[in-house]
Length: 479
Image (tube, rainbow, N blue to C red; front, side):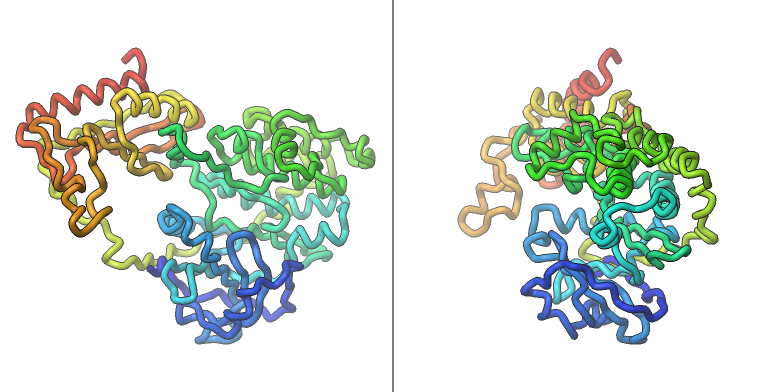
């Protein structure tokens, strides 16, 4: 499935900045190949944990360059990859900013593999600059912080969290000049904070709970498994500022468990203890506040951090990097195959019960409450993705998802199990959206499964109302 497409943006010819990543064994096979019928690979640029990165040119105009991120097969076959790939790529259609590398095209089903097509920005990564220079002057750090602050502030206004900010994801353009600036990369799989994501393991108590992010830069709340918002990115920026100004990370452990524990429990060393006592106290204060253990203790947005940093260096980093034109282009048309479109729901309205709840509880507590509800009613969680949970109730013993088995065993599937009259399975959908840090709105929907439509609307309604009362007891106690 091709998610969307556009013509690649024209960029000026410039020397290609190759990263120091080693060439993967599979990389050479893609040189000269054409992705999506439009982008011909010219050179290998680098390799990450989940993708090979290539420089490419458009077939129609060889002077137009783009970057191809070809997702590695082992990542593409991971559970839920297709679902998250499509959802997150679609989400980026509405977010464009002068200091963010644009996502131009994407596909799950290209013969050469799942891929992202990104705007090509000549430059070097901040990681490469750190490897070469180790420590930057506070004024130069301020020049880089300004555009980064603008990009992340705009993302926060759009309800977007990057979740994996690090020097390798920041491209520095015109490095070493008075025009030096930053472009944020890898926003393609950023999280939208408006959609709470309660993981399957949190609802069932089985399996691992995954936290994204890079250990050296990850926020304490992501490690704790708490809900996250834009202030998690502010913590990551704090780590990078500490590194740029002192030449070392605030927590410098080779052991990953010790490193993660330090993010949660340890206080970063004061600058004078790591040989950076010359840094203005207001600059250090800005960095230390950004590194606070809890989001409420940090700057509440990147503009606040940038303004405090500016006071320390004596010039306005925010105003100096104000983009000349941050007008977003018109959204591109999404191209989705008919097979991906959701079929119309033809269930009789008499068998559908819907209501909206606005619970005064944070996302983490919502997960605990929902797990309590599911355990009490012996529910079976069939789906958990950002903004949506689906649970089935009153499934008969031996029920299996129709289509999971075939041949002589197919009669054992849920479609062929005998259902007791009045005990037909109920499907509960919980569509969730954050109202603010402490409130979650839920659209609750009870309906039958299509292959088991109830025969008694009155009895069906009574059963749904009874389960709904149990749900309200957990989500909105006292009502």
